[in-house]
Amino acid sequence: MLEVKAATIQTSPVFGAIQENLHTALDLIPKNCDLVVLPELFATGYQFISRQEALAVAEDVTCRKGDNPICDRLDSLAAERNMTIVAGLAERSGDSLFNSSVLFHPDGSHGVYRKVHLFLDEKLIFDPGDLGFPVFKACGTTLGMMVCFDWIFPEAARSLALSGAEILCHPSNLLLPWCPAAMITRSQENRVFSLTSNRIGREDRTGAPAEFIGMSQIVSPQGELLSRLGSDGEGAAEATLRIVEQDKMLTPSNDLWDDRRPDQYRL
Ligand code: ACM
Image (cartoon, rainbow, N blue to C red; front, top):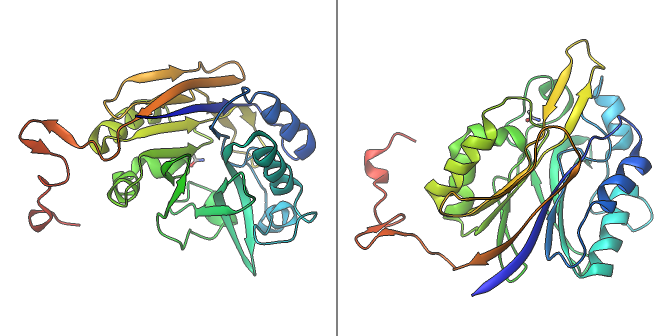
């Protein structure tokens, strides 16, 4: 059985303090992790007041080393520790701007997911994701990414699971209180691990204060809560994921995939 040592990091970033936020988040990563997930927009903060402001700190993931303070630091750490890192950041691509989750492989290559379901004022800042829900080989298994509000659309987790993901990495800046419980269901109904990395604290840059709920967590394919943090402190939720590839049998006669009836569904 494959074992993956995983952690989801919970921080309280200060808007715009990129170097300080990077330092705090990376300091919380436990030693000897195989896989670590950091929150959505973890280094910049969340409440941009304009697209221009977000573009100024957005990074082009395909750029040369030395051009991207956030990606360069995560590239170095992934290589140094032979670890896979998933982190949320503002991504610039030509004239487009995405709220993305980037997978940093230890060999310096990247996987990218661009948030499909934008929340509230994110619609004024970012373009909606245009890459669908890709999956990536990493840590000896298959990973998928979704970002925060994607949780309320079961199609996001389902698409990833149907594409073979065994682990859903879920960088978040959660405001609504229902997500931690819903992600237990997303894990159960797809029989996948889910790693939600959320932030805490408050931002009030737009006149609509945002209070982030924390409760970063790791859930097993059976819906067991393997680790969960509270709503107050920074920290790391840790668990060893014991992965049985494509274990979709719910009972001796119910295979989660074979029992689906797409001809009966309205999709
Ligand atoms: C959210 O999608 N950041 C609430």
